[in-house]
Length: 386
Image (cartoon, helix red, strand yellow):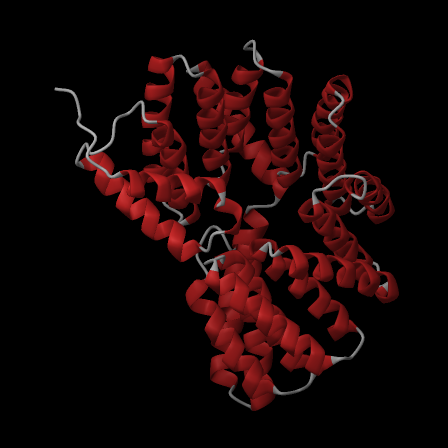
């Protein structure tokens, strides 16, 4: 029986407009639209060949991934894949399989994700898609400490970018290379590639990417304690974000500039920036960013020896922590909480927090990238042999 479309033009146009403006839409609005769209799909109120059908399903799948519900995300991605295959819609099939692989990375199944990307790369797909897949492989290798493979993947993407003469995409690859060098401890090389990206973005009209590059430079200069340069790039990033209103990234920039002011001993300014960052991250339900900012606020009050306030912010952080996604952050939270309780003379709570911190530290050690990759690689090939 053929499904009959009964949604109104107004409803369809509302979804169409949301898809067009997605990067600037707040999380609550997106979630509400996804709930409504799921009801339409369940009630067969929209045809599967409707132009908004697959694109909105992709948003629904992404929302489930954000809510740490990977099974549901993969369920919708499989629906998208089946319909895209039926239509012969290769771009949508590539997007769905790519996003499926990204969900696998969120589950720690990095080798399964890499296998998905490698299979896609064997297909006759456009250069732009190959660049995306190689980039994602590079990012995944970087996350698991395989820095040489990460660099190789990004340079392969860079070669394709040169062939296609996509200068802005070249800037994106430079950002990813900078991230790999920064993570591996080569801060000056990170600065070199972030600066290359800035040179490209300054010639383009994409001020969002330019502000992201400025923000990365702010972060890496903070890490090498060159606070003058960190301040310079942080303020440039913040100015652009306020002008062009890209709120999702705004919390990241505010947090970085707050960290710079904190390092300079400007605690009141740092507190105001951290709070503004927290408001933005909360609005978009960015849990990881909220945790990061709350930990920074806890540390800020610890440095000022305001231990009651440090406890207050640490306790606000704990309900947001979820394993295995936030182990590193949880380790920081409980360490700071133990320190604050100790300074307040509450040794029992200090001991409990320290015990929790040690427990998490052992889990973090278990997830050491090199050990993790070795274990996962062994498991992957064991299944392959079976």
